[in-house]
Every structure is written in structure tokens, then in C-alpha cells.
Image 1 (cartoon, rainbow, N blue to C red):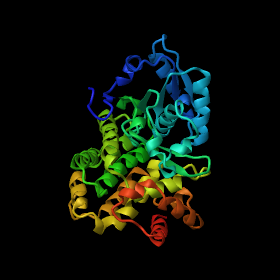
Image 2 (image 1 turned 135 degrees about the horizontal axis):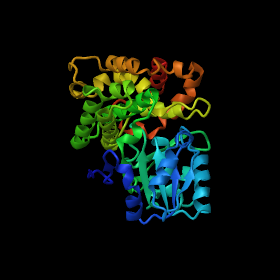
Image 3 (image 1 turned 45 degrees about the vertical axis):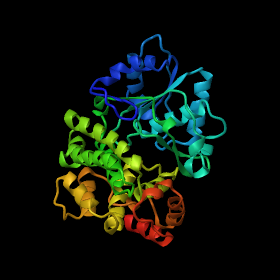
Image 4 (image 1 turned 30 degrees about the vertical axis):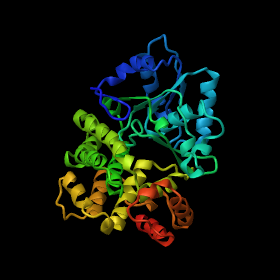
Length: 376
């Protein structure tokens, strides 16, 4: 099945077998494949190399960090240039796909990655990039659909790159690639997808089609119990299909924006010592923001509860806390290594995060501090 989203992804079990055809369609003969050490260690890079025609000569960058950095982009770009590559594949989770987007941009843009961050006025500076293909191996970020990337810059800030030109030229969404994902990674990735859907719905931007897509993603994740199912049985093919679709839907939905969950998550995820998983952070922080926004979103919580298959009067924050416990996520930020003395810096980072533009309730500096305390 080929879907008509933003970039017409190939979405079906076994679609990874189309990789040579997709490369040829884009005229890519020497791709740089950005992936991570974990996938390389379990033979996934060997698998993808075996599926690519011998007339195509891929180069592998296998050092994508858990949260992609400007330094990693620079290293991958050097490899791209040294091997005369003409396209990029992001193969892995959101980190590898975001890294691939940044490399594709820097391959024909001048200066440094940070110059193109939203915070630095870079939104309008990004022009057409070299061709980039996204191949997700997790179901969470939706980076294969989205027009953004999140990179930890050399100055320590975790910043957003955003442009229609960053949207991958093609995506191969094969749920079978996620069958071996461990329960804890399935849980964190799944909460990333769920948070995308929920925050997009809470956004005050009026975009009924995007909201409808977000509600459908919530239904697949919660009402159909796909997230719980993949955490209990990683080989559940139907649930894996639903989670990958919900991940893509989450990215489609957040075309109307995100919110304070992501502002806080980006701040905490910038810590290079803790190296915290983005989706897990989202899941842990989400209940706090649901309570904070409750009286500022009209009837949206009722619609979210209906999509979840629970009573409209349910306490949404409590339901998410129960879900987190069921799938094995930490109970709070303290359990993840965040301490109270870190909060002032986290607040400063959160206050400047672009996700705040579409949060339904703008926190004051003191409220940001209380939100972090609450999420501890």
C-alpha cells in the first residue's frame, strides 16, 4: 500500500524490499546510511546492505548517538563528502532519521547546523536539500513524515530545525522492522507517538483534519491496546502495524503544533551525561501537563477519552500514569536521574523552546519550576 500523506510513504509489511526501487526513483547511487551502533550490532545494517542492488554503493555511518548532536552531523557529513555520496538514508529510530535530515541539509548548505535552528532565525534559511529517505525501525517519533529534526548543538542546547525541505523525499514504513524491539523501547517509543497525538489535539491551532488524525492514532494505541500488546508480545504483527501507523499519524497531527510536554522533554533530553530517551521523557511528563492544561482546552479531553475508549469523565492524567506503570516506564523524572538543582537550567531551556508557541496555556517562569517539581 502506498499512502498519500505528505511524502507518499511505502507502508506495508515487507516494504523494505522496495529500497532499491526507491533509491532509483530518486536517482541515488551512492547513499550515506545514517544508523546507530545498536542496529549495527544486531546485523540490521548487513540486512539492508543485502537488500540493495550491487549497482548502488552505500556508505554507513553507524555512530548516531541516542540524541543526535551537531558533532555527529559534522562527522557524518565528512563521511558523506569523502565518499562522494549523493543522497542520505536515515535508518533507525528518530535519532537516525533526524541526523539524516540534518546531513542532507548541510550537504548543500553553508555554515553550521545551529545557523538553521528555529531559535537562531533559521526557519527561512533552509532551502532544497539533497534527497533523503527515512526508514523507521521504531514506532514513535514519526520523523519519516515530519518536516523537523531535533539536534543537540555544540553549545549544549537541544534545538529544532524545521522546514518543508526537511521532510524526507520518500519513506519506507515496514512494521516488520519493529518486531524485535525490546519492551522498554517499545514502551518509550509508543508514548512518544501518543504524546504527539495528544499534544497536537490540545494545540489551539484550528485544524480539524489534523486533529481527526491524532484521535485515530490515540484509538489505535489505547482503545485497540496496541501499545500494551507490543510491550507484552513484541511479535504481535497486528499491534506492530497499528503502532507504526499511529506513529506516522502523530507526526501528521502535530503539523498543528505541540506544547509544554515537548518543551520540558527537550530541556531534559539535552543533558549529555544522562542521555535520556525522548519518548520516555514525554510519557513521564505528560500527566503533569495534562493537569496543568485541563481547564484551558475546552471539550478536547472528552474527545481524547472517547478515542481511548474510556468514560469522558475519566481523569486523563491518572489514566496516563496507570498506562506508564503498566508498560514499565519510570514514575517520575527523579527516577530518570533529574535532580532539583537542575531545574533552573531546565526552566531556562523550556522557556525558549519553540513548542511553546502552540501550548494551550503559557506557563510563567515560576509555573515552569512547579511543573518540573510536579514531574519529579
